[in-house]
Length: 217
Ligand code: PD2
Ligand code: ZN
Image 1 (cartoon, rainbow, N blue to C red):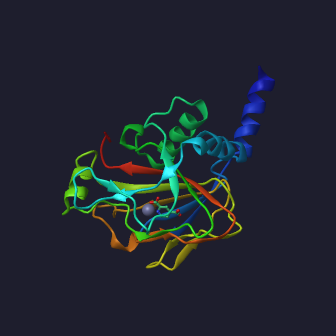
Image 2: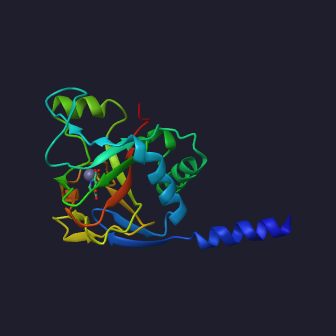
């Protein structure tokens, strides 16, 4: 029993992540070693057979989505509450780290980019004055934070960029980025304009989770 306990403790210690503050305002944090290499490979293996061209919100249509040249990844969503043991454990760790409950989170989304693939600068928060934005706001309020997990180290390009903050985060397998799209007072923050730079060599694999103000449905 003692041996099993020590082994689990050792595993946990090996999996310890580090936290680096990239920006105080808006709030941006980088967690190195958030995922193990095995967890990254597991997520990719589950998602790979299910990828479809990514879409963006159609601002003119309540509940509408559309393919857009500014977002050229392929992706898929896992269910909001995973039954897969490994995914569930990751969901629990994200909620423990952010203090945002599981029911406030969208399902984990996996995105894959080939060479040239990109997501041009955009906001993750919803536009409060468009039919598309309003329909999404009704599902759980604003997306207060974004959590991006890097599942693969991209040899060149593919950085997550924040043009107004002069920040570029290179995809490194196991790292995770947390940023708040709203101020601590709950106001959307235009300084969080961000994108995925074009991949120059290799591939890019990420898993994202959007965290809401209220229970998401
Ligand atoms: O691929 C990225 O790095 C990235 C950057 C910004 C993805 C998203 N946003 C997103 O899916 O919202
Ligand atoms: Zn985004």
